[in-house]
Length: 411
Image (tube, rainbow, N blue to C red; front, side):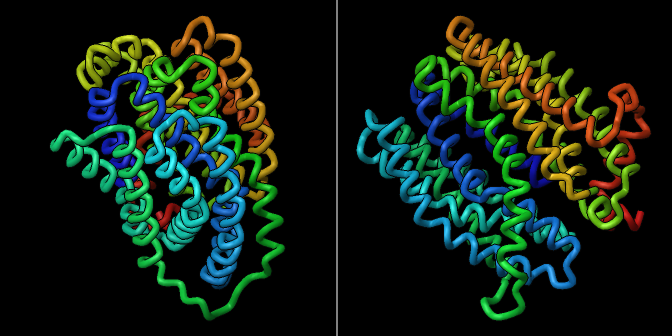
């Protein structure tokens, strides 16, 4: 939890420096580029990190799963190169040669990012939380330092922002690989078994990432870079607390995977809901003060969208726990369907509202998608929405599980 929240704080800390230096239009370009770089590993990985996490949780030798997954990542290099060419021509052909090359390098790095995500899944199952902290925190830390250094010498521009992002990605991949130290010799699980489970999980992971990133890619030609810049600032502010949900979900994942514990699934969601409600309310109340203060007065138009997305963060926190519970119990298809429903609602609403309402319309569209997706996940879990009304004791229980040195099943 410290790693994930720390990463969010660092990304949020770099966002105002970037916004104040390159303005709404430059912020829009970097937001679209980073969205593409972040989305491609999800599309190419096709659910592989989730499949690795579940297979590692039930395997006698979790590292045999990681070895096979590493081989599968190597097969993604050619698709990544082809994607870099297509993205360059469709979205960034008007940018400078340096910016285009930097974006292409970020896109081509997708296979190693998938590998890093696979290793984090291994660390989750092995309860190596310090390694997760390092792998999670290093990328935004390197990025933040790079942004600060470039800004201090007056060299921060779109190219510098993207180069810093790529450098942070390289650092976290190397750190995770060093921490895992998985040799090339050793037992491997069958490739096709891992591929089949990966494909079953792919739709859910793609839909989940798309619901949080794809809008920034599609908004670029729809409303222009400046409006996208305002929306991306709102996203930075509103969704910063979502790693809390991921931390809670990771703490309960092994227990649910091994025992199909429905009680733990409901507890994690109910407790996360209590935490999410407090975080969302606080985010809404302080947005009029913090957004202009942090990002600058020229981003005052981002305040209302940020408040909307602060509410959306609440749905993302509980959705992380719900989707993790479904994955852990082998129901990845249910997550896929739920996320796709939310994605269709969100993107469809965005095309209706964003042209007229700009960043506010895009934020309302995202909120609708988050809410629909979460409600859809409750159906296969057989959890009634009213049963999720929690108490401070529920919030305390999940925080104890996250902060404990032992796994939840040992508490």
